[in-house]
Image (cartoon, rainbow, N blue to C red; front, side, top):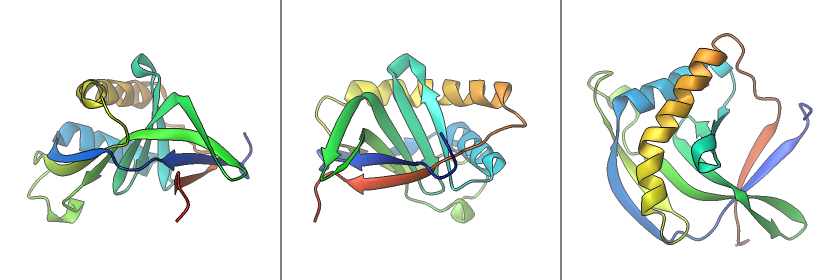
Length: 150
C-alpha cells in the first residue's frame, strides 16, 4: 500500500443505537496509540472477531473484514458497529472517568459482537502497544462513506 492509496469503508443505514459507557482504560489507550501514530486515524486488527477497528479522535469504527459492498464504482468494507463518545476529552474530570458513548449498530444481531468488542478491542490495542511501541504508521488515506448516496 502506498501513501496515495485510499481505503473506503461504508456505513449502512443505522439499525439500532444505544447509550453506554466506554471504559476509561479503553478510551485512554486508544488515544495514546492514536497520538503515537501521528495520524488522524489508526487501524487496530481485532483478529479474534475478524474485524478491523479504525480509531479517530471522536469515533471508533468497527469493520467486518468479510463484508464488502459497492456504491457506484467504489467498493469497500462494511462498518458494522461504531462508538461515538458523548463527552469531549476536555470535559472529563479525570483519566479514570469512563466515557458516555453512543453505540450505533448497522445491522441486526450485533449485540453479541458488541459484548465481545468491549474486551477484545482493548486486548488488541494492548498487543499493538507492546509490539509497535515506536513504529505506528498509517500509510493510506481513509474514507468513511454512507452506503447509500443521498
